[in-house]
Image 1 (spheres, rainbow, N blue to C red):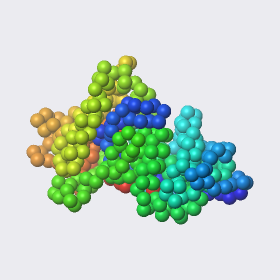
Image 2 (image 1 turned 30 degrees about the vertical axis):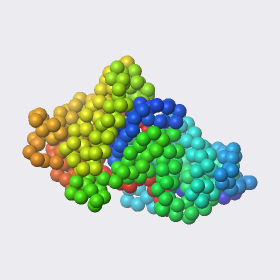
Image 3 (image 1 turned 180 degrees about the horizontal axis):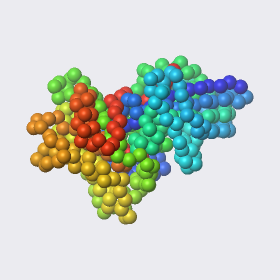
Image 4 (image 1 turned 90 degrees about the horizontal axis):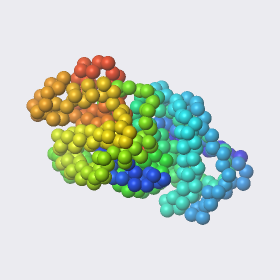
Length: 390
Ligand code: PMV
């Protein structure tokens, strides 16, 4: 009997063009492409402990993945010294029975899929019957409304793949040197939670169909127009659990009369967004992101039956920020002419994300704090995606 213990960390990501609505429900294929910014410190850290029972063997492409496994979710606060300074701020992940089932099913899926994925990277898979334990913690407050399924499933997929590798060093080398391994695991992770496939690379990630990959908007070749490093200030309007899960939202938006043409509109906006990011045109990015967030929430508001994630505070903040994005309008904050506009967006929740160049974050933090003193603000910067914690 031998024990393998692996730890992976994966950040959350915030979409400017949204994944909302699926073309295939079973494998989480999106109705339209989406584009997001990967964050750095708002993340999930997951530990997978695997006890290999007798008769373990190695499998490559011919691996059957049929060994009988037992998988347990351990609802403990998880602390890992190697996780560094964030370890002190970690919150245990609390899951419902359904969510635990989804997580344990994903570990089984990932374990079987690794036998298929590894050979192309020269890796071998441990295929012995095993007992598995999963422990997980977030660096952001539980139920803060931050999209935790993206970071959770990305961290779980990577930690499981690490635990499947017969040679951990070979896996680490392949992970460090081959982006295609990130993409293969992103495809696998997508089957557990769609948006998690955008947390394997960074900072900007495009997801179309089955595949997600980083796009470079800061290359020196782009000259003066390149995108600066970005920060995300998240105004936490409410932290109660969502009344409508994102899985339900994906289905319910298709009952809205606005659903007709939505995938095409989102694709058109995605093209414009990529162009604006390539040219570093923050004003255009800001307007497109605003339109996209309002369109997604309009789908919620016009579904049959309508629902909303917005709270009075959400609207108060959006009204306050509006003149920065649409300068002709007036609001509670005063925009200066020529000021760099923030990128304002919302996930399927009431909290407002305000993305600004990292160099402007201190000034924006103060501005938001004094304009909206009732709410807590979380802050992060862009990051490069999931990684093993050694
Ligand atoms: O990955 P899911 O099924 O939790 O979908 C989340 C989708 C949104 O966060 C609402 C939008 C997005 O693209 O991240």
